[in-house]
Length: 558
Image 1 (cartoon, helix red, strand yellow):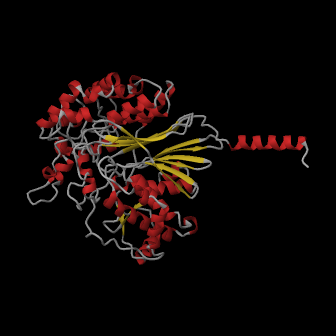
Image 2 (image 1 turned 90 degrees about the horizontal axis):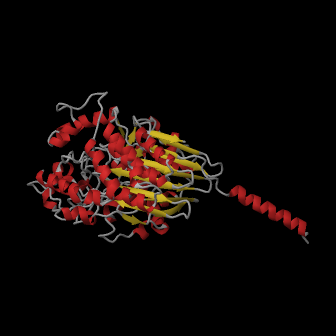
């Protein structure tokens, strides 16, 4: 029989063990973003008493100023949040919407084929912006500070100016022809009709005034009143079809994230209108049936590619705007469905992607931006935001100081025909008045018993596979600085080819994959701009890393 003293000792031991097992709050905060000024803005707001969600507003708004080629208040985004106090998780959907007058015939040439020039350039390519409403939503429902505090760094930088990095200047040059078509765009981004040179100071006082209106009036400062009229008149004068009602009807929405388990880890990620979470769940459910850590690199890559192939096929077939089309998400993300897919994977042979004729994928790039944040209390924020392609539509409406997106190209404007990223779609992703185009943006939390990672990246159709590789690397124990630098590979069902960054595979590995039936293409370009923060819940230690592929990325713990 156990004595009372022994029971007391056992009780104390149990309490002590529980205390040791309890997560240790971070002693600092961590931010990783695409630009050092955006990261500094986030820390400035944290220093004024804000939380991770206030910092997310500050970082996102500052990226709109310093990285307009990738994101901005003329675009949209998806923001994944987890509140430490009660575990509440939510995705704030600030994706752009189609104007009410959308007509798919406007995007066709005389031959009935997609006219890509109309869907990626100019006024018809622009959806109704969502990012302003998303920032207001986050600040008002999850932040601790007023918008005027969270937006102050972005307003100051827009007014005073900064010196853009080489990537900014290079991408202005890449889009110079389209930018030059619109007087306000040329006045903002060009110098005497040419791309600016290093050392140029970029100021956007009009954007500073727009951000001040949002800070003072919330949604009404952007979607109603004088600014709304200016936007509508400017878009229509350039040949577009926006109305005041389109802007006034826009609203950010809260959606339940996609959440699932992978071999003891909880993955929380983006739900539709993002395709990322569904695809990640499908891929990881398939891969969960294998002991990946026991496989050589070639067979591990083979299985990952086969999972990618099947997920991207289902993306094209089933997904769209959840407010407009039904989707079999429960089935696509189920273990039984994954088991069925896994049964069709040969351990040593590639499965040909033959259901549709092959075609060439469009150019890929980092035409999006991502940031990751953990604050001292353990709140998590991951934001992926975009104007779609480089400098979006290229159209700046005079008096606004920001470029409009070209997200209309993310709709399936012609069923079965690829968009600029080579992605297929059907009527589920067709544009309807007020509908949101399917996205690949995949802000993600990776939650284990001892470690948490906040992961995301730009990269067009390659976002989902990059996040997949980042998740697996994090689970394997790689620190943020290592996993953001890893060479990457990608397969998206069609074209039936593995594209890979230089260094992703050795010559022998490439030969072995080709012997399995895979076609491997090594790209001369590098893609993505991953930003990751992590939290060791045993020690409270934080780490932050920005992708070395970017010139001005910043990952900081402070």
